[in-house]
Picture 1 (cartoon, rainbow, N blue to C red):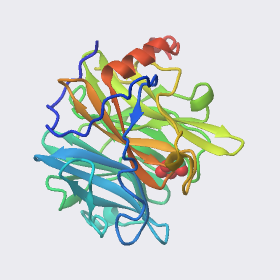
Picture 2 (picture 1 turned 90 degrees about the vertical axis):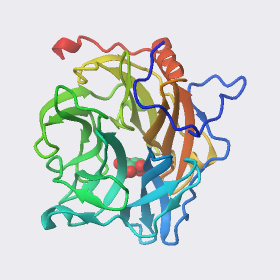
Picture 3 (picture 1 turned 135 degrees about the vertical axis):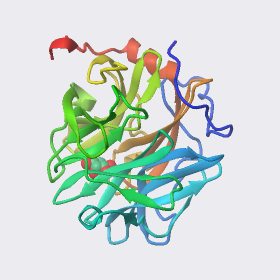
Length: 333
Ligand code: BMA
């Protein structure tokens, strides 16, 4: 089976074995949600957040909407990846005045590349676009130019350069709740100028028929980039957010080698089905263990709280292969 390529996992990576008799590829942490909506004094909701190993513990960037329901991102720290101390004030970025001006910030991702932690998020700049910053200590954050013109959401960096360039997948959008969405790939030599924009894939049937967008940092395996992505159904009662998997070519990630037809995870339990926005499960980060193939997923639930879920590279690959989608002629798409 596929092997995860990457740094060894922290010894205390959060994990629970699959419950006996459970027949789905991703299972929930029994103590979910790990972060309640009011974990800091001003928060209305804490969700769609990203964590990474940091030293011998963990750090993260959290989406906390305040009780004015204004969106911003906050740094946080944890010894075990489960219990978090989130700063009570949002991140203050250093950088050029035009760059650090703030309208709103949400849905952060964190990605370690060559010893620096890069944060990407949906950044308000006359509409949503992709903000980028880096930090080495999760105390001082240096903001770079926005990656793209508005409108775009879900900018997710690859954890290493591809063809000598930084690489990112994203979902071009509109100013509102965007009734469309495909995943595109882009490269940059310097994290300032982005190009080589390639279409990766678009919507398909059922659970992913309205829009699809990148989730956590793609996971490098010896068979390709394993991408966990969100898919959205437009039901008669609003959007439903689930997630599924695709395998991208390692050197040309716009080439889709495989894609699952079935979702791997979706809203099923109370804190996912009810909250500020019902029926949303939205993954923004994973921890991975190359030795065991374990994958721990951090996801936002109902735009209100943060949950943990578990799977393995074998579970995701075999489920994708059991229920595959025909990806067509990728060389002529
Ligand atoms: C998307 C983003 C996410 C949110 C989702 C469901 O467009 O705004 O932050 O989780 O909608 O409301």
